[in-house]
Image (cartoon, rainbow over all chains, first blue to last red; front, side):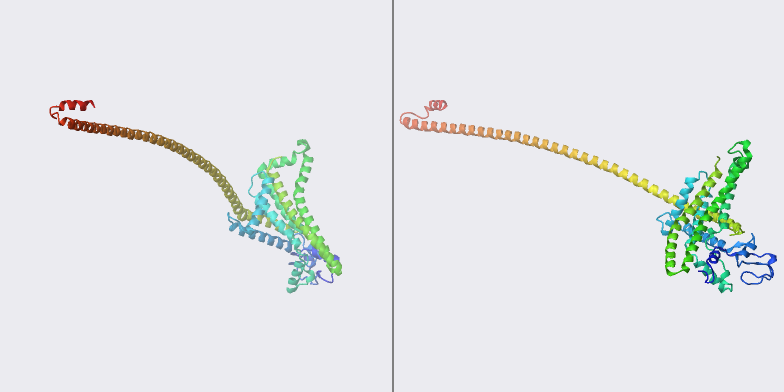
Length: 302
Length: 156
């Protein structure tokens, strides 16, 4: 448990709050913040509760999500870069074998679903697969370990540990999943216009399925179907991981109960974690496959 | 759970990492994989070729062995024929020699017989003459009657 004084609801909310770095608005000057500090001037700082995070508005950053996602991407990048530099065409060693297996898997997926010729698609698919997998993998680390570590570090720097928030699974943050989905969306738009021309792309949106006379209806239908692609991409990953994370948090609540309930919670956590191995891999695979399919649609006329 | 500039940050990181992977990670790995695939394909092709060559070599060896066997059989047959010939020749030679020896022996025998006859004749003649001479000694001059005695000898 994060702290003995927390209720179950507070415990859950605490776990679902990001560490937000942003600028407090001017009108809070002189007021007391959640952690008891009186605001002397509005400046960039970490939010100490959900209300403050909300007050910081759009131009604030989830330090934990960004930190973990970039950190994991760096781990992925340097691990693969290390193999790429020392790659041998002879008998591959252990880690190279593993990397080659992933590369082969991604390459086969791209060849199976993508009919056009574009050098960005395969690296894109690899990046998405590995990155999403690693971000999802953070879900398997017991929910209290890293947040408690962060609280200890925060306390060492003089902060009130109860107001240090730390979410370790970047893919449970809609900002992260939407950030990636929008990245894919921009690529879709870019290649649609590049391959088919602006007119061709517009024609695809406007002249199907009802012909030229039904243009407004076509635009609405095709527009929705276009927008739904990144939205479903982002929400599918977010929803799955958020639900999984929430269940882990609920299971973790049981450790606060009696020995019997705690033991039962341990079994539940083990079971859910084993099942989650499937989910995190599957979600990474789905994100990758749909990206390939969407980009394939952007490259072909239909 | 608010939508914040994190989204923009994540998008930027996304593009940066995709570019890095595209530039530094994907190409060397995929090149290595393709190269290994090619090496394996070449190796398999070489193995196939080697197998084929071995088959050919086996066939050639079999052919050589068959030829050698045929030759050996032929040589054997020739040798047997030659042996028979030699035996036949030897038989003929032996027969001829035997005949020669036999003829020589016969001739010698004949000669011996003739000689013995001659000798006998001479001895008989001389005995006769000596007998006759003993008889006639008293009555006939040997010299005066030699032509009659010679005539007698010739008639024996």
